[in-house]
Each structure stands twice: as structure tokens, then as C-alpha cells.
Image 1 (cartoon, rainbow, N blue to C red):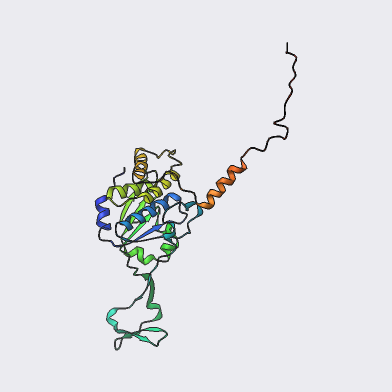
Image 2: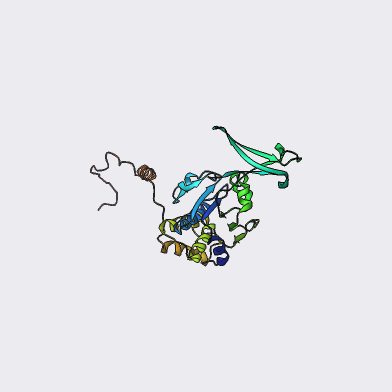
Length: 281
């Protein structure tokens, strides 16, 4: 399997307790499978992990384990007020609470001009996130509203950028970009295996689904020995080869089979038949 900068990954991941995994908009099944597998694995390793995507997951992803954990926004985001004025001009900042509203009172020093409305800057931040991991995003803008509405988080936190696209803009503090990899699922499987992170049948099944989908059942040119080693790893940890049909899908399959049954034979099919021919002695 692939070998990446495991020492550098450990340097960033080791002390991080609150990790945010971000998936791109226009997401593929492979990217969703890779992100969810990493989410499950890091959670089993004792990390506090959240996973977000700007767009809702499609029905086609329904076989992925943990899909219901993907949120469409970052929770617990704080509002940060920045005063764009020389701090030496400010005497003190106090609060006033009338029981319904909370007010901040900025008192300038004697002889200094008061802080104007234009000098108050509003930002989002302070989620407690220690580390951001992106999976399959070529640039931060590719995360859609997740990035656009929370730029303060991405500017202030270390980012591990995982992608197999050669056009990736290398926006992370650590960029794990592998254009030769068949899929993001192959890359994440290598990370989980190489870092010794937990892996079980759910993680193996997710990775196997992403791998098979992205490689068109191992038919594309990017398929290599590493790809098959990844599939073997998924099976060794208990990954299921085929997704289990949901009850309603099973009914649909039964109906399809019934529709293909041959029609009933003609009413005279079992009656005696008399054959004539000119070749009889």
C-alpha cells in the first residue's frame, strides 16, 4: 500500500482532540466513503470528530456506514467581534445586561476618539477545532458554504489536505496529494493502515465501496498493485464485498424477478398431440 508522510501526520494528529473533516461540494461516492472511513477510524481512536459537507448526501450513498453523521454546517461556531482601533486608545470594555439583551460598552480613554461602527469587525470562529482535514477538495472554495461561512476557522487552524487530483492547489499545512492513487478511498486506507488507526468491517466496507465505484470495479488505468492491496486490506478487516440491500430495495428486486417470469403456457399445451409425416414406413 501507499506510504505517505506518516511522521508529519502524527505530529499534527497526535495532540489534536477535536477534528473537523470537510467534504467537497459535488461530492462523489469515493470522497464520501473516504471521509466517513476516516471519521469512523479517528473516532475509534478516541478523537472527537465531526464531519461536514455543503451538500446533502444522495440516495446513491445510502450503503455507506455513518452517513447520518454528515452535517451540512459547522456546529458550535462563536461570533468574534474585532475592534479595529489602537488598543492604547481604549480605556475599558464592559457589558450591560437588561435581562433580554447583552450590550458591550467600549469606553475610550480621555481625549481619544470613540470607536466607530465601521471599526467593529464580525467573524465566525472559536469552535474548539484543533485540526481540519479536507478530503477530495482541490481548493478551499471547493468546500462551498462550509468554507465561505467559516473562513476564520480555516485561516486559524492547521489543515491536512488529502486528494488524488493533480490540480489540487496545495492549500493545507500538510498536503497529501497523490495523482497516481486510484481514489481517495485508496489513500485513506493507506493512511489508516500506515498510521495503525482502528479499522473494522464498517470502515472496510465503506472503503471497498468507494474503491469499486471510483475504479469502475477495478477497470480504470489507475488501478495498480496498491489498489488491489487496498482491497485486500479492506477484506482482511471484515469489509463486505457487496452492500446489503435495504428491505424496500429487496422488495423492488423481487418485483423485478417476478416481472421476468415466463408467461403461462397455452391451455392446450398438455393435451395429446398427433404428428403426421411422409417418412413413416
